[in-house]
Length: 398
Image 1: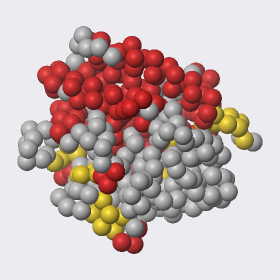
Image 2: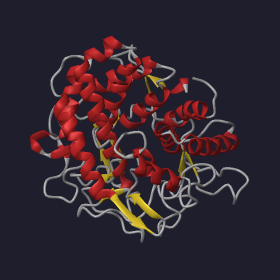
Image 3: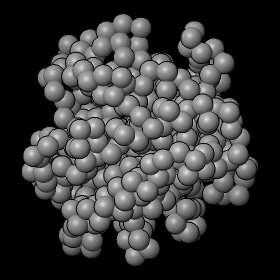
């Protein structure tokens, strides 16, 4: 992982981890933030450096071409424009097309404060936190950055306004990632379930942060979080033959995508679920529908669009499973967390004990080894950081 450690020339003392090699060897908001969160028990300085670097590029204006908004945290940083004609992508050097980077930044800042380390960094970032919190609640009165008049209003949501940006702006960012049970792709604006969990946790972490430093705004953030939690419960939960579960997302009509996905694992530990809801999520994650034996399928095996060699519709991502493990531990589901951790550890043995970005969703019962995904990054920061969660779960390390 040391080979992914970078810094910008403007902030040489603020290290962060590039997302991965060879395809994503640069600063990615969510990737770098999640890697720092997973590694926080070992390296508070990395968390501080990641937060500082992203704060230096925080959005200051509204610009549709870059998906920039005041207070927003970037998605990716490059030295020049990224053009991928085959995918219809044209992204500016500083691109903000991520709905999750801002709440994840606030979550990491709050978690860093609670460690008691990097206190000077935390204090210095209070103005950035205030701007990010304003974006979270919604500039101009738009609740949670939602698109007014859409079915996703009242939730963090996204829709590419340019025609050449990312059509999906969560971590599952391929074009077909958000689909219904019958394989129909969702139309935007799209509100992702896991991102609402991030937003809920971010609001409460930031409220506590502001209280700790005597800053205003804590009460408003707690009110925002309580209202978001209630809206989430009313809008995202649905039922199929396997029982109740939170949908992967709401589409532009406010309809939940009627298929389970690994997204629900990102809700665990955020506080947006009550105890009964967390139990339902834990049980669904460990079901054959989502658990391959090595990790979590990104999409239910029962979905029409499931394919074990797809990028986001049936494959297994190391960090995705690690985030679910982390959440299971936070909710008190130790046995379930250990099952997933043992699965990832077994998968790592197929890759020289270096977990790749993702691998094929071929089940352990169907193959004696985890099957590679050919174009996977190796190393990938958040996949490598998953080792910390595995170690914590199985009683090794901090």
